[in-house]
Image (cartoon, rainbow, N blue to C red; front, top):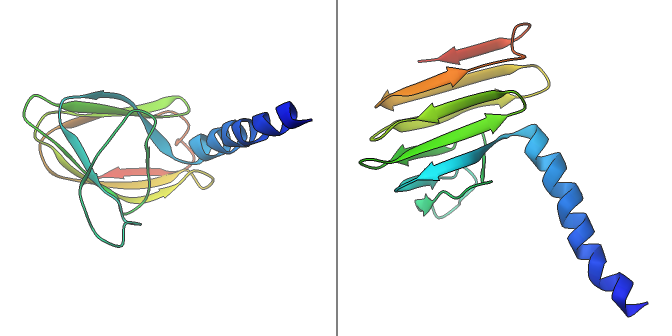
Length: 122
């Protein structure tokens, strides 16, 4: 019985991780110095972005010199190039709407499944 109880947290983490990943884009590739300022962080501290970290509305991403990051969401993906300052303004997977602001730098987007929705980049 004790052995079964040890696996429950692992099973729950996998289930919630999968549900969570389907709702937001996640970092699938990180090279170099990539930082995130999370909208949910009450201390407003920049932190290193890691693979599988989600990006939520209000989050701001900065890539350093020679750095880049790829995000994936279902069949869509986008890449932030070196020295990019990026903010995800809006993201609603159910309504297929997204609003992105690229302050400086460069990025590219391959978007699928938003044909009936709205995908905006400024």
